[in-house]
Amino acid sequence: MDFKTKLKNYATYTDMKLDFYLPALENDQKSIYEAMRYSLLCGGKRIRPVLAYSSAELLGLSKDDVAPFACAIEMIHTYSLIHDDLPAMDDDDYRRGRPSCHKQFGEAQAILAGDALLTKAFELSGIGAIELANKMPEQAARGAAIIRALAIAAGSEGMVGGQVIDLEGEEKELSAETHETLCALKTGALLTIPVAISVIYAGMLHTPVGDMLIRYAQALGLAFQIKDDILDVEGDAALLGKATGMDEKCNKTTFVSLYGLDGAKARLKKLTDEALGICADLTEIFPERKDACSFLRELAIFLLERNH
Amino acid sequence: MDFKTKLKNYATYTDMKLDFYLPALENDQKSIYEAMRYSLLCGGKRIRPVLAYSSAELLGLSKDDVAPFACAIEMIHTYSLIHDDLPAMDDDDYRRGRPSCHKQFGEAQAILAGDALLTKAFELSGIGAIELANKMPEQAARGAAIIRALAIAAGSEGMVGGQVIDLEGEEKELSAETHETLCALKTGALLTIPVAISVIYAGMLHTPVGDMLIRYAQALGLAFQIKDDILDVEGDAALLGKATGMDEKCNKTTFVSLYGLDGAKARLKKLTDEALGICADLTEIFPERKDACSFLRELAIFLLERNH
Image (cartoon, rainbow over all chains, first blue to last red; front, side, top):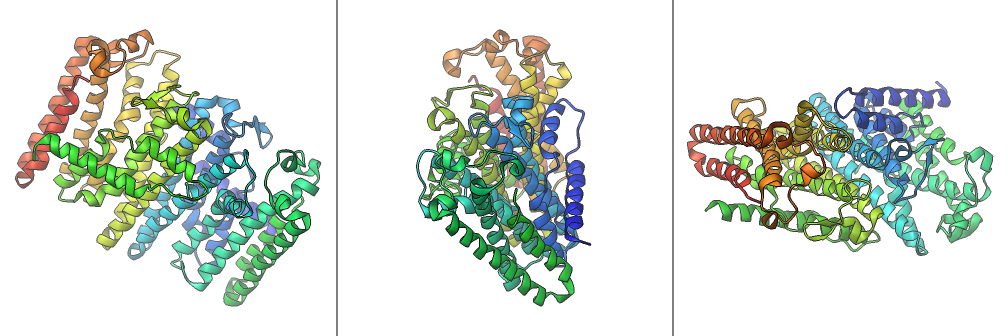
């Protein structure tokens, strides 16, 4: 199966699972399900679940094994966008070409929809851990380790921590070091955790292969951010679907503001090479799983050589 | 040890654990820890953790066993107060006699502090589940079941669902049935889950004793709400520390508005009798844990015969 078809299949599978895990209930609080589903089931590339499925398959797991966790991560990603768009935060009226959640349902409902999605994410994680315990009773503790890791990636030492640094960065210039932390936490943590979850599920944490996969995801996450910064400078506004040059206009600390366009490109190339190098190494280690390795390789190219 | 001393000891133990689990970190995002700790470490009776510890001890567990989950519940309770106080929600400037979180740290930081506390709650739950798995490897799946139950109690079929009904109730009168659901979800779920967690931990879910304890907590939770409604009508504003008669002024659907003062009192009496009856039955079943039974009994009296 070619890369694009497989990518599409993973996204379709994710949409189907999300719809299953979060049905529209007809009860007294049905309005919250409407708001949650409005923001969650809006298409999207589902990159985080895709990272979970593809790394799981490389490690000999099925995508069904990690699906509850993969969907949990997508719910956490969605809740963070809902809260980010709120008037007190980024105050964005639109998200993916539609009114943002609070424009559609009001601020109070949007706050609660975000809270409910974050909470639902851990309900799903509990379900995933129960399924893991049923499948491998002697390894049931791995489910608890996954939940702990997911919470760290999403919380004050992960995504939310990154948002806090970002907030403060609106008022002052960030040092290169703080900016690096910001990127690792705000976007990196939630791009790394899908792979980390597969690694923990497979019992391969702190093994050479586990470390390689996590480094792959970390490189990808950071490179993804650098690519965004570069596109803001030299991307095509029409292709991107948003105005370029906004970072400079807003005095935002970015990889380009810190290292110049060439410096940012050099760093992007280095990280891309690192990710692709890891994929090559994994292909040697898992010759029987060449397809999975090749998918991870093409995913890196897809995310880092994009022009929008 | 008399009841009041034991209650105080449980609260002190909770404060100590919360401080341990959520230290003030000195990193780039240290401001979020300040906001989280401001709202979390403010004293308070810690009723929810107390319910967890006392039911755990009745079932032969130690309070250390359930402490991570008990602290998680307190964090969820705290995040819900932070988000509830936001301008888009109840718009409260004060909480426990101090500026509410958004008045002290700004709205964006308060939204993020709430998000981070909710997320931290599930990190703690993961830690609790890991500890459970270490202690009882063959029962490790119970940790996953606890996390799932906690997420359900806190989410759209629990506390958040109750807040949604409450929001909509500001605009229209609620039926008796919907009002009952509102109370069961908004306050009942988070008062029942501490006991449910001890029951699941002890492997006593769907056993007669497990069912009795959960019914005790459900009766207590509902009675607690009815007591609040009664105090709003005939309580002493000075003792309560807030104006009375607010429910009628705001046209709020309450047990008093639905059933009259006498009807509400009769329901309170019935629920109190049910809770105390269960304590009496538990004392017969666990003669060797008379102290724990007697604590649960006194706790019900303390919460339901209060005048503030």
